[in-house]
Length: 223
Ligand SMILES: [Ca+2]
Ligand SMILES: [Ca+2]
Image (cartoon, rainbow, N blue to C red; front, side, top):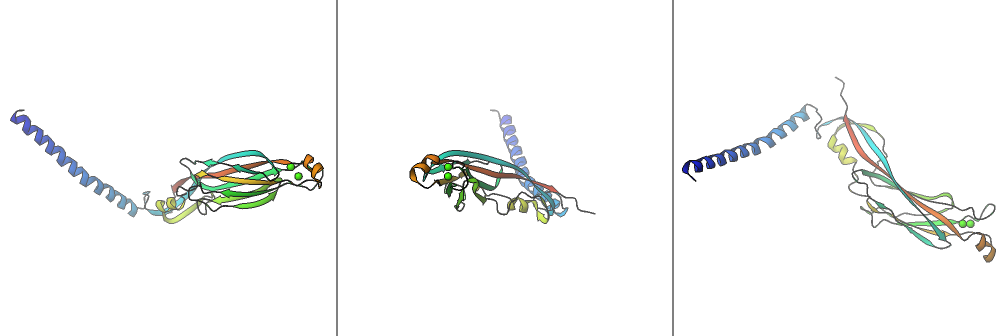
């Protein structure tokens, strides 16, 4: 390498270094200046307080499973929830059965329902309940995002960041929503006749997951 090449190379290296340093210093300063400036102007930066229309783009994730259970039998129903990019508002679990095995009224089968949510992120409190098999026997609603019901509203005097922080599931609700059902068959008195007439029931567990994403629009203030 000649002396000239050496000089050129090192000068070029110094120039690049100087430009890099200048950029590293000026760009963050530029952006923070713009951010604080748009705050003052009431612009759409995420930290600015203002008036916002808050809407929720909503969808449902559903799943169901039906099992035929005998008298005293427990069925374990599994549902693995992955909401993807969407936030989870709440999870609704419905246990339904329709006992029409016995002729005439009465002798309706019953279900006892318990849950094991230890496999669910955030570990919601477990639920339990009982009901009779003439339609929806037991329903649980488990709230994941506190207070979320999907209603649109107008927020005033808060920042976009505040709204986003409020409507966030915190990563909770994904995982395994295990629901267990024990069937109790009710039938005609008398072990032989009753057992022939009614000895089982089809029991369905359905999960409906209300999921959402946020849509926040700045509302123009009256001048
Ligand atoms: Ca029955
Ligand atoms: Ca039955």
